Image (cartoon, rainbow, N blue to C red):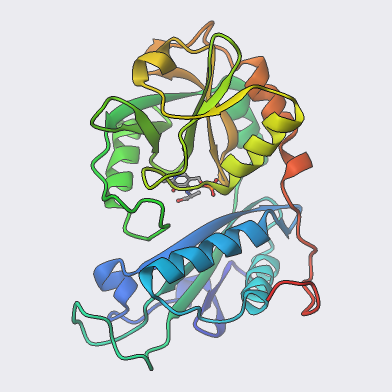
Amino acid sequence: MPRVAYVNGRYLPLRDAAVNVEDRGYQFADGVYEVCEVKGGRLIDERRHMARLDRSLAQLRIRAPMTRTALGVVMRETVRLSRIDEGIIYLQVTRGVARRDHGFPSAEVAPSVVVTAHAIDPARRAKRAEEGVAVITLPDNRWDRVDIKTVALLPNVLARQAAIDAGAYEAWFVDDDGFVTEGSATNAWIVTGEGTLVTRAADRGILRGISRGVVMEAGAAQRVRFEERRFSVAEALAAREAFLTAATALVLPVVTIDGNRLGDGKPGPVTRALRGQYYDHAETAPIRSSPEDGTK
Ligand code: PDD
């Protein structure tokens, strides 16, 4: 079986999977999404991702397409049919299909659900973590509700491409006061000269990353001093270490910012330790969910 996509109730070979041209996700970016890591064929941190999905849906007044348990079954089945061992699962829910009109469609219009999965080469990811990555900085030109994980990602797309064009892995957005908000698809962290772990508070200026929460727990378990506050680009440049977090990257060391080397230009010990202990704090879901597993 080739890679499989779930589209509104059906599992289809990816090449045959399609949504209606009047889907509001396609026409208005009127939808939300989640990206969850798959490791050893299992979903990582499913419960936390589903909780964030529920919040995103509620914030945009999109109704939940099915129960969390049913969504869990769909995600697992997509992973299984696509034979993904190491990779990610992508889940998108939009406000559904209706004649193009900016206002919400009638309440009978069902939300659309698409789930896809793809493999990530663990060796490539490990090499990146071993070497560290480069980031560039750019003005944050996004709307003020980036705490909602919407599919409206044009500024993020342009920022990531600017990074790629500059030979970097990620772009860090910087607010009007010169403080780093987050990356185009990752949260941003530094370790100060005193060894304090710093990341921006998850107010409306950033997405509350699930891996961000896992790293906060890992840091607390290692008794690393921690401050949830803003940091400037200048502070990041003077930091001992910096790194990124996301379901797609886990904990990825940053070794240059705008072409300036951080410290000795190598991934630092705090970042390595947090990466090393990541799975002690992430939740690994069972391969099969049962309706009695406590999720609703
Ligand atoms: N992005 N900030 C932004 C803007 C993101 O898009 C993401 C995730 C994160 C990290 O969140 P988490 O730790 O829950 O993955 C932070 C996903 C991976 C993506 O768009 O592909």
